Length: 154
Image (cartoon, rainbow, N blue to C red):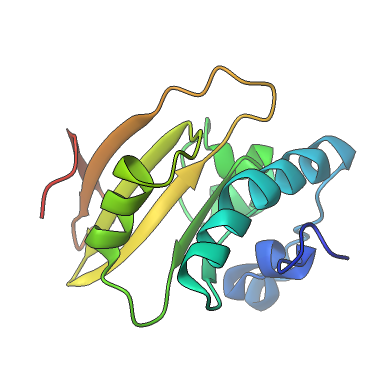
């Protein structure tokens, strides 16, 4: 099922953890509507700007999957409003800066995340508006706990 010109639902649903543990990661109608809005309003413009594929490393998470990976009980991933991604060959921090300064995207939250030298972007979008434009940096410790600071910092 296509959510936008270049994104399919399966890209937002894939989870090694769900597959390994036999956890259902099937979104309901409300989640599908939110995932479609995220895809059209945020992810598709990023894809078009860079003229290359975008790798979604974590998209929708069912409640059971979110719990299994230790996600926040208020995670926007479980609402279909968020995904984690990278753009192959692009500097992750610089991609964040483009989103903030040059894209004009109406995001709710953008988090530059780093764990053991691996970087990725968490971005969310509320389809009904009220997007905060919140920007954070998260350094994830080896125990899985993240230290968050306001703004983007390398």
